[in-house]
Length: 366
Ligand code: SF4
Image (cartoon, rainbow, N blue to C red; front, side):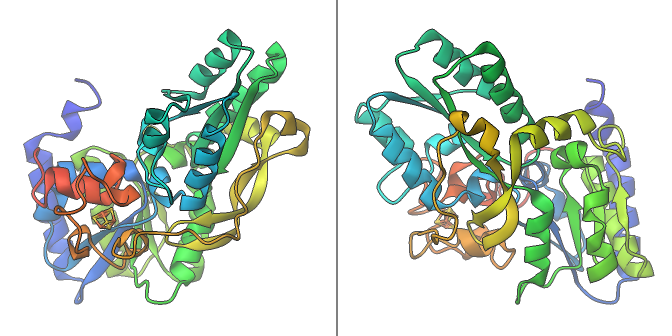
């Protein structure tokens, strides 16, 4: 398949592996690179990328899975909305199973609440159109990747005069979270594998502070094995040469200017707000709130200053800051599995616990 097979061939993978090992020999120390995209987390484990790397290079997962960073307070607010018989809740599948303080949305559904899994916010809008007696609320979580489609749906609801459609915005933006992450104590990183999908929208420029202010190696990456390996090679060479920049190794999808149309849609509907991140806490201006002119289409999200509760043994918060690995959690693979997930990192297909549980350290494809 074009744009897939050519990035999975064994020969370029082997060549990149050799080049990375040669570059790593010049490091003189161990380095830690973090991926901050759930798609990268899954791809790295699926293709067994860690097994190709020398001991000097350690890969860590960060706050890149949108469901994983959504705090318990958001789930709890959704659960309270689900209790209202006049409300239909619509959500992406991963959020459906994330535990709140008192069960998950799938439990509320089993008790009779009207909760429906959709593939896009437009599906939710169709429900609103087909059942004007119900208020249809879409649980809008995700980063700059999903926010434009949600904004476009709000604009469409307004244009069509559909008055029973709402969103509850839990959207978050990535650059502010990265600043919070690198400024946090304990987190010692040398570079970031930057998100491919988010970068298609915002372009590489908003990450410029990472090399400039913090001397971090940065590379925007695609999702195939050679994409990821090329990005790891780029990061390693930046550290070796001590020449830090935001490199773009995903040029077939990420343009310098990003996607101006998508950003314009976002800025028509949303404005920055403070946001609570699981694992990172309250980060100023790292969320997206619905602008006052579109309030009729919005349900107030929970107060962002409320802390997020968690199961006392769950290590998701440490995982999302790169301070632990799935296997450090005492519940991993025993109490907590994809069929009986305790924390969001095991629920979401993009969560690091789910990826590690499914593929292990060696991956299934090479
Ligand atoms: S294994 Fe389960 S309980 Fe442990 S950190 Fe992962 S999601 Fe949380």
